[in-house]
Length: 440
Image 1 (cartoon, rainbow, N blue to C red):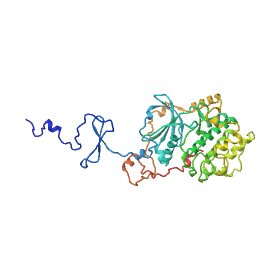
Image 2 (cartoon, rainbow, N blue to C red):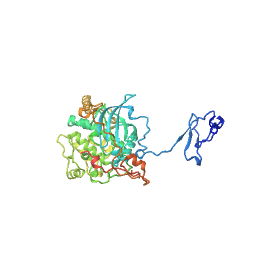
Image 3 (cartoon, rainbow, N blue to C red):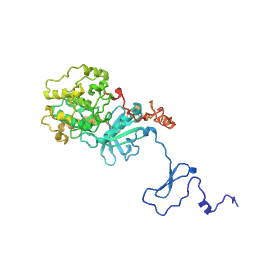
């Protein structure tokens, strides 16, 4: 006959009490507004029950984000409409202190983009978390300015940060100078005007660029400039000064090398260095390996050596831009417009890109050089290296972290390996990383 004590009628089974739920009859129709919520009572814990459109309920457990992800929010969201698998990697464009730049193609639209991939471990080890967040903020803030590379998406994974921007299928001023040795006066005028307009736009937007150099000035398919790489840029308030030693040595203003507080005048010094380099074919001051040595070179130089074939107007404007005293330096676009060097050149025409700085033949030659310098994918692997396993991206790296509430989190240590705590005090984390940020 079996065990009759364990049997229950179908009516009893239907109305039996469930220890971790509340029986709620499903309504015939659901409202179009937000699904209703029902809180559990004190005996059932603090979890919430939400109803879906189908009438089924599910539990949503509040779970803290890993600190390695939360520290980069909200600039780098982990939930984005795109991901790295949406793109086909075509070539490596360049490498930075802790970043790689790849040329990619969208698999659906076949549009070309550039993806900058930054390693989280290196960023945290160099104490540059806020710096990377500022970079994303600044690039999104700049929008669609004609002489700045536009940024479309930013997101993060467990190990990396991603910045997707327009791909500039040309070259840069550094490659152009290597090809031409020296640029003619007309070309330098147009490029200098485009850079001056861009710097004026950045400064009016509250952005200090701090890394103006030939390698960061790209040339698009029409021959005009596109400013890229805002990794050292900083958001500043009007009349605010900063003191971080960063940039590229041969383009650094004396006040940066000295460690003194500085402002927007440093970008105009860099513009003077760029103009001199394009016109003369070399830097105005010899490049050294350390910023202290570079400071000695700049301070000890009585005057800059100008070639005899350079026009007086060119010498005059470069001398004003390379004034060692920031208060005497030419440091605004209005002063440039009225200078004799730009006489006959309309800055409005330059802004509309109506005058091409270089010829199509030069541009085609530049593009061939740029394509040849890229590392294509898939790349060939030597026979003795084929059997080697690829080195995985390691998230664990030595560093010093401090959690804001000063409590020890076991889940953080487990996630970050040897990283013990993270500095989340809200203060600026700009790095005085001369060796890492400075390229000799």
